Structures are given as C-alpha cells and as structure tokens.
Image (cartoon, rainbow, N blue to C red; front, side, top):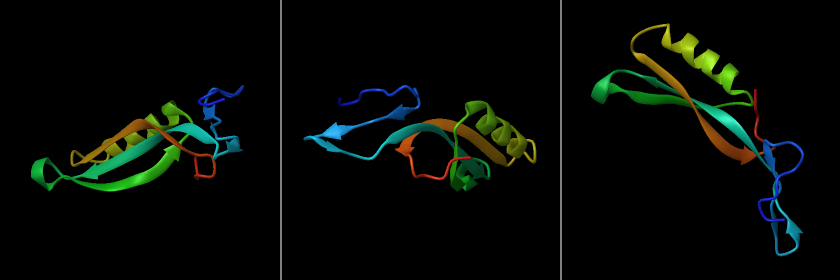
Length: 85
C-alpha cells in the first residue's frame, strides 16, 4: 500500500511496517513577497488552497495591489489536518 492512491486523487494513504500513518493531501501553497530585488522578503507562506484556480485568483489580486508585491502558488503535500481554504 505504500504510495497507493485512494478514490480521491488528492489524497495519499501511507502504510509503514503494518501501521497506518498520517493521511496526506495535495494542496497549493500561496507565497507572498513584498519588495523588489535585494529588499524582497517573504511575508506569508501559510495559506493553503485545495483548488489551484482559487489560489491563483488570490495571487493575482495581491499582485495587482502594487508593483512591490509578488505572489504565486506551488503544489505541496500536507497532512489532512492542515487548515485548507
């Protein structure tokens, strides 16, 4: 069962030495940076979304607020008890 996918393609069930471990889900993590060049700094990396389109929508809205804001989404595997929007 190692790495076996369940009916939900976004969930992975892992089994190790006969014991069931944490169920993991695939989500999209929104990164938000403020500043340009050497002054750019990461200000947020704790918002997880189930849907890529929703994550990208927020990234675009943040980016439109000013040229000093950069936001993008990356896929990530997290435990199912992680807060996901």
